[in-house]
Length: 446
Image 1: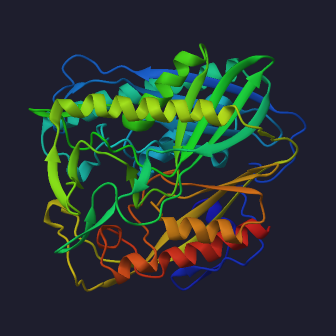
Image 2 (image 1 turned 90 degrees about the vertical axis):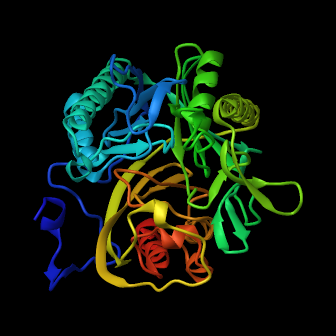
């Protein structure tokens, strides 16, 4: 049993989590007050070695990938490690948390590892997915590249920590849209879908004196414009929508680090994509693949997101000050079997959900002033976002996914009722998202 679970009782095969309790790892701060905001920022590029490409179908890099670290060095310290990758396994996140905690001299529970969820980045494959010595060697290359960047960014953040002002701004982004489209065969993934969409663009700005040191962008949209394409002969590595926007903003604010945190985007995508189903102009959808032409499309939409960020920064912001709070709450979600071979998934009008026990999940919370950020591993959908915000007592509540690992989709009930992709490609059973909302509401009430 790990340190976190030492504090709670076990009954049969599940833990009992009494409402209203904070779970603390011994000797690590779970909830304390911060007197000032001492913040440090770090940024480092992931530099792939010669011979790394091709890998996983990626033939070259068109936009560099980065690691960025936001470090709040206070009585309740906190670090956000933002990594421009698709996802990270729980094991890899645990290693990153441990290494970052050592570098910053803080507790592991006070480190959030968040993938930006760009679909145009290689994975650190688990052992079960490694089939050749070449794949094993390239995994080692990728791990070395990633951890070199993490160490550099975390060290810079620690060295540059200084008294800072943190303000929250909000605007809207025109690049966000529902991705769920209805085909004759059933619901599927596309762009420009008919479902609802939260276009809110939230921006945390860190300033030291007159200098902007960091921006943290949050939006409910996947970076999936170049998903599966970018070249006639394969895929291209890119930070995609979010990565391009961050790089553009770093040009606007020299010396600053600009990072992205993905929200509840399980059913949200950019308004245009380079590959997949797109509106055909005749009230229908057609399959497309723009190959190289997808690169300028991604750059255009990324620059648009950057411009919309600058527009949001022109509005009145909220100064975030006072008490920093971090907490977490484990719970068990009902699980189901799923087909791990994505190529076999198809639109359908019917599907049987075969239940398969439970999966332990954790809800993380960061709160400061008027702001609360709920962090979870699964990809959530628009209805779940709305429910979480409705239960929150904070003036501004953001939902961050892909935090401290990945758990695929956790769809709302309406997705199961319509046999949507988010439900089909989910390891969770109907009712899991609604249970997450209930558990998050209990944590927020604390």
